[in-house]
Figure 1 (tube, rainbow, N blue to C red):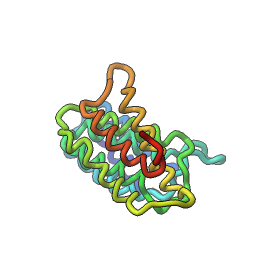
Figure 2: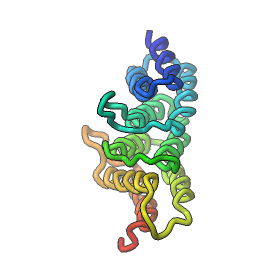
Figure 3: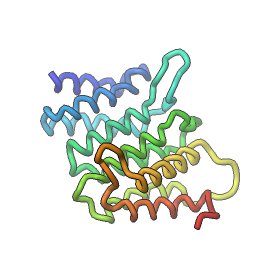
Figure 4: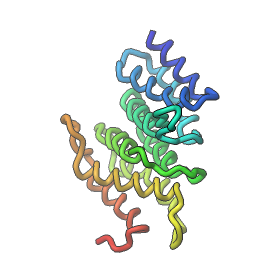
Length: 206
C-alpha cells in the first residue's frame, strides 16, 4: 500500500497542476517516514524528486485562491526524509538543496518561511553521523560559485533567497534543533563557511 502511494506521489511531480506537484513531496515524506518500503522504491522516487525539485518554476508559498502550495518547503522536508532513508545519498541531496535555493530564474522571494524550512532540512541531513567535514561543507561550493562575481546593485530575488537561507542555516547550526536532535557534528565548520559567504552582502561582519 505504501509503495502504491509513493508511486502515485512520484508521478504527480510531473502533473500539470501546481497543487499536485507541490504536495507530492509532502506525501513522499510521510511515506518515507514510515520506513516500511524497499530501497529500490525509495531510489526510484528519489530519481523523480531530484528531477523535479530544482526545476519547479512555481515556487509560491501561498496563493490567495489555491491556498498553500509551498513546493520549496515541502521539497525540503522530503529531501531530509530521503537522506535518512538512503544515507549514501546525503552529499548529493545537500547539493540538490543548494541548487534549489540558488535558482536564478525566479521572481519569487521567500516570504513564507521557505528559507527556514530549507535550513531545517539541511541541518537534519548534517546531523546524521558519518559525514566528513569536507562532505559537510563541500556542497556550499555550489552556493559560492553562484555568488561569484556579485557586486553592488539591487538584490535580485534569487540572491535574496540565497542570503535568507544562509542566514537561517547559520542560526540553525548555532542553536541546533529541539526535541533531542541537537547540533550537527561539523556545525562550527559549516557555520564558518556560511559566514564567509554572507560577508559578500554583509561586508561589515567581523
